[in-house]
Length: 206
Image 1: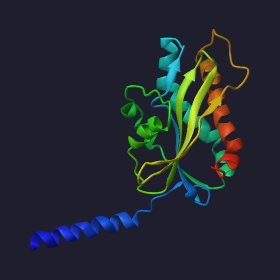
Image 2: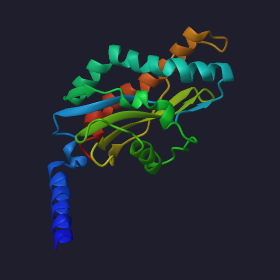
Image 3: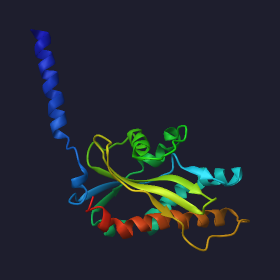
């Protein structure tokens, strides 16, 4: 009898917790007023045709700089474009090394879902937005990334699209670290700019 009572109480407590936690769906993206923004996630980015020296610079120096610069130069534009209140969290940037696993091919949404499921987040509910970088491809002079909206409680992806950033007037082959920063930054930000430009058209017609 006591075991049954304890089991019943445990069941009700679990159900109570579940009911208190709102689970979001795709349809909630447009009307929701607040988005938790997790920045640009490079944890599974593949670097194509860069020298080992430049790969180390990109991975250990520039990834953090890209996030800092985006927050300085583009964050207000992103908030205005989406028409929402944004709360920025650094959870993913702090976890970047521990998140990095054998590089996923990132060919479809299930690969991106695996990345999001690994996030250790302090928030328990709401809608999150992260830009997951697939590759920095020097061979084709482009960056591929995906804006990803997801439900924080379940970590299920609600909306995802691939965007390619190319930019213009990048430095030549014999570039120094400052030039390396510029070369990739314009392509990363170009991809995000494309998302912002088309957001109102694509997010509401899925």
